[in-house]
Length: 134
Image 1 (spheres, one colour):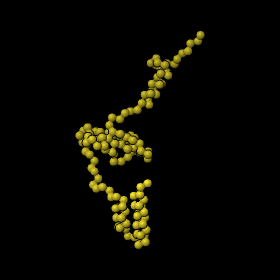
Image 2 (cartoon, one colour):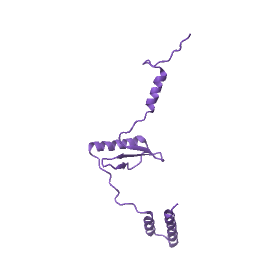
Image 3 (cartoon, one colour):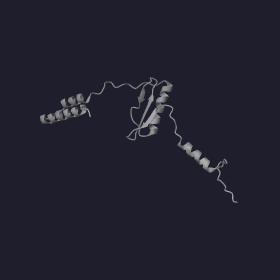
Image 4 (tube, one colour):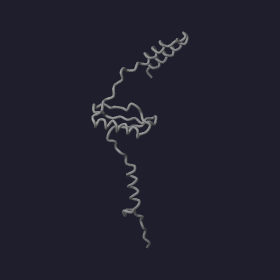
């Protein structure tokens, strides 16, 4: 009766065992120890972390690659560890609401009367659409 020879790795294990171990190791995910990176619908990456103040801090920009987002998180982590970290400054003043901005924009434009009236009508329509419940 012929015997079947199982191919073995240099360590003496059957090749199918070695390949399954390699496959599992290759697909195992690395768990991040600091911060969070998420992929946006735009296919860019957004990085954030919990700062020493207990608040979530988001990167001031999005990143083209996950590696760039990881690098930014590494810099933030290093700053915290070294005691150089400072919270980002808040915006000087809140952005105006749409109605305030639109009216100011229209007021400061040099327009002919009919154009001004048409723009005012369009702004009113947009304000009405924005305030109507669905």
